[in-house]
Image 1 (cartoon, helix red, strand yellow):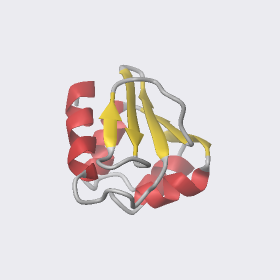
Image 2: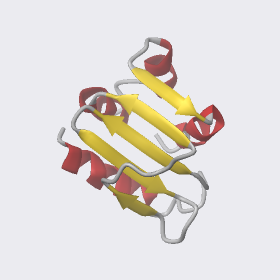
Image 3: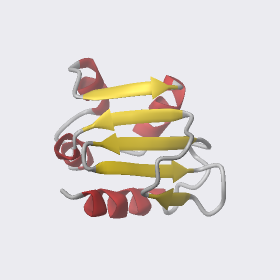
Image 4: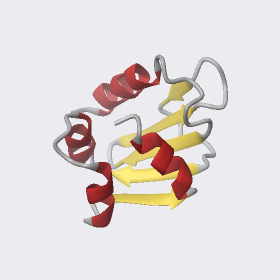
Length: 98
């Protein structure tokens, strides 16, 4: 999975789910960042590293596995495959979209 692929997937997840997270989130991958702003309508998604309520750090490979249902977000966090900085409650809301 590339950063572009991940960005497209996040945009797809945002459609129909506007306002469910109601926060700003950065997904940080070694290849770059995806910023999701669900405080505006429609939800804004970019590859800029902006201020966020929560930052999720992981590999694109593990992100792809999560999207495919092969890696549970909670298990990824517990196993150290995903790190969360900032408001963990925001991350919990986001997990409901996976």
